[in-house]
Length: 88
Image 1 (cartoon, rainbow, N blue to C red):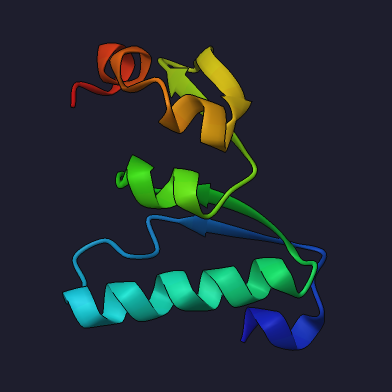
Image 2 (image 1 turned 135 degrees about the vertical axis):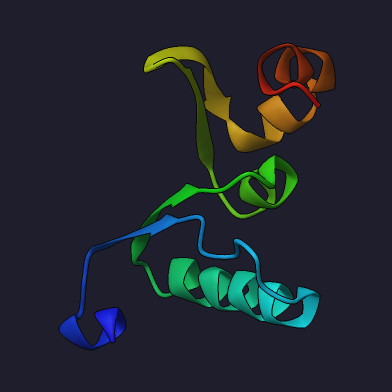
């Protein structure tokens, strides 16, 4: 429904929470299509690996403060920094 309004930005908050793995995979596929169409996306999700794979930039917040930020590919290459803040 949201795509029918021709948005410039979509905010997705835990869009895959509690869903079956096949549905989750389809949602991430559609997120890729949305991004490819030029619509900006702000994604909040617990699966940081998927978020980093589907974003250009990422920000990690801890109690409302930015503790880590940068290009997604760069952050993905820093598992120690991520685990320090995400408890993974």
